[in-house]
Length: 283
Image (cartoon, rainbow, N blue to C red; front, side):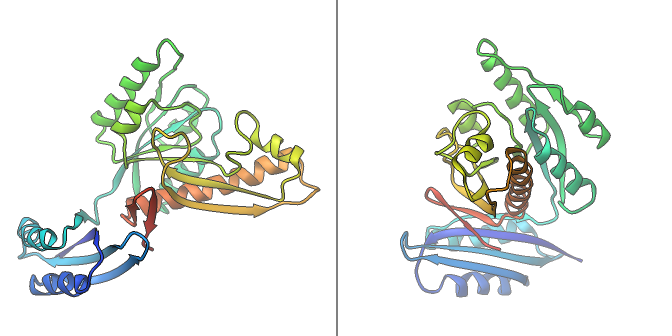
């Protein structure tokens, strides 16, 4: 029997990286199933994702020790992930449930291979929806006076449920810098792509008044810079003069759901690597 893993790495770009990594896997009895790579001329960094399996006779710790020596030679940031391990998600939501509903359906129908450990919200609107999918629901109301306690409860939930990824599925609360730091690299947000033009409430109605012809959505990692974290995925839809504000909300909701689902999938499949304030998505 064999078990498959995913190697991800980035390092200063130089010749011989793919050759040396492939040779090490071959000499260890591993079989490469899939591989993607990218060399960024601007940052002079190299990015690599390899999906491979190992024979039952090879201990993973032995392979990691061998690779550690090679990684030191090339100054690699690297990690080997268990390809069969299902990521555990915590979904945060407020009063717009389209992204939550989409993710719940994708998981339940087997389209998205993750486990949703819990849904948490500052409102109770979607308690029944979570229950219908047999997902625990946590009501964590928040106000200016209780924000610190509410975020402490979120961190406790993340730690207690061994959460791999927090998904802000239209969670309309600003996370504190401390919470952003605690979730660095493992929290994804989704929002409309009108920013910075139409900030605040009812952005689609603002866009309608300006007669926009393209609407879209952006999924990105959460940082303390509001809505400015490294972008994972974006998409757009064209509209025309006949579209009402309700039409824009409907179309925008569809785009937001699709973009967030893609970003979540690529993250849990270990396809997203940070490249400074940008991302490399190896598909």
